[in-house]
Image: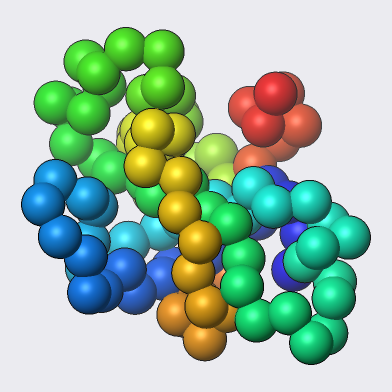
Length: 102
């Protein structure tokens, strides 16, 4: 597991306006943290295809279609960074470019 990888994840239970359900997430935790075998948590940013998310300002980052294995143009919802148990990560989709991660 590496910083910049995109996984399908189950974001449940959640509440309020938090992104929820099965959706892609970007691993944003440091690689040293991600490699720790006894550490079960990972820090992620949820991804949405909702156009309303794109209007939320500088914390909504546009991800073009095909970046990181995403089929549709999407939005990284950076203001909803969260910690998940690794068991909620279902499948690796792809890897974002270093430019998009910056």
